[in-house]
Length: 98
Image 1 (spheres, rainbow, N blue to C red):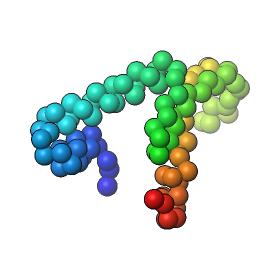
Image 2 (cartoon, rainbow, N blue to C red):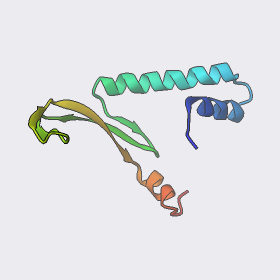
Image 3 (spheres, rainbow, N blue to C red):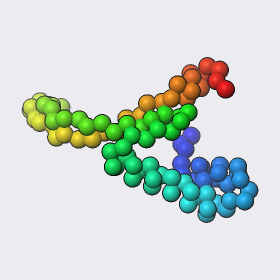
Image 4 (cartoon, rainbow, N blue to C red):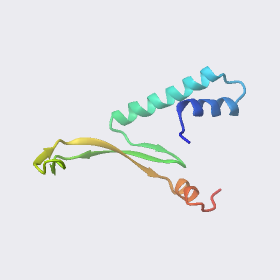
């Protein structure tokens, strides 16, 4: 099963009967906009008990075209990596966590 924004919004609505589906969707969109803005700015994002999104700079490096075998230079770029929290990792692995 895929977790979509609509599913998240529906779970928010179910958890709080006073929130409409439209409001819940707006909350999800707002949260994701804040996350995107922070990551694009180059900041790391820590969500306690879940994990950390880390923005890393990769320098220019030599690569190879897999189809032709020709050498080429890969441009420097930024990547986002995710490091799960210990609590999340334990839950995924089935360890007992409070």
